[in-house]
Length: 481
Image (tube, rainbow, N blue to C red; front, top):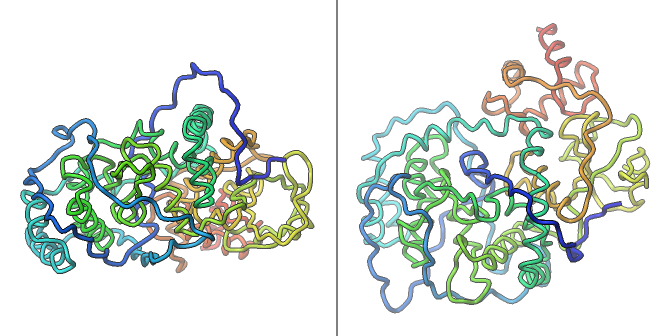
């Protein structure tokens, strides 16, 4: 039985020579945007000596961007003393959630008028006029960013297809190797924040392949574009303000801010607000560097997950086996039951042993329905869905961490798994919307809202209510019109 542990055993030496997995480019995986967050950022602490004026920002394009950001000296406080319990870091309040994206909206305000208004708002929030005016001089819209934001189809894949591409054996090997290389930093992060090395490396691998794929987009033009666009304007206006604060604080210069098309920074892809709140100088060298400093990446990632509420010494995801029929409507992340109840319903581990007969709360997660892979998801799994609200991404990241921790390859399920095509899924979403369900954007991606609506329709038509959409459900809904 591979029960997830808080202390990882030393990884065995892995035969090298395996070709590294190709980096997942930032245009494919966009973890953080929109999933945790914000009230207006706090006014930065100023030094007695004024910082030098940042260079005037000229329009930056992907072609003119420097290949990689150099290290930028920045004197910062050492990491704070170890917290005594899981939860938000002392003195740092959790930011309020952003509103949901406005799908199919249209921009009605001119860019120039919006930019003037934003500058006034940024200055009123405490950012110096010198920084605002210098950095935003010559600002332009990047239509490539708009196109990518409106067309994010990577998450439309099924979980089995998605994880097969991302939770690769090469990443398992690379994660274990990274843990060996940075054992001291990982051990310190686990003692201080309670977050296991395998969890950090799971995210690290998916977000940038340990720095190989951080993105080549100039961050500021991307943030400016998304802050102007109506779809997620409130969110990205706050992120753009946070980027200006980072520059005013002296951490980075505008031309050093290179990352993803969604404005994310560094090897675990922090949005600017996340960087301001949680990036730390974990190696004590006087600077924060999430681009090139492994120790800062480890400490900052653990600090952020601790703030989200990571529970030390508890599992996050365990693969299990379903041995018979059960009330499928209970297979829902919103429903947490004691492990003793899942045991009564015949849930076992892969090696045949029953799950513990205790009161630890867990949800039954069936990403491909009752015939596909099955997992018990624990309260720590909620941190994964806060990091990225795509269930497919979150489950893949959590599963990859268990593999790095020693779990075997997952089972492909216990029988035939019917799948809808992209167009069939959109057809299903349209029918659900016509029946009054809020499924968000009609995009062919089965998210939380679509799964909840599917479950209700399965109950209505007397089908196993495992929240997984099937051709049988689509047919029943067409007949029921």
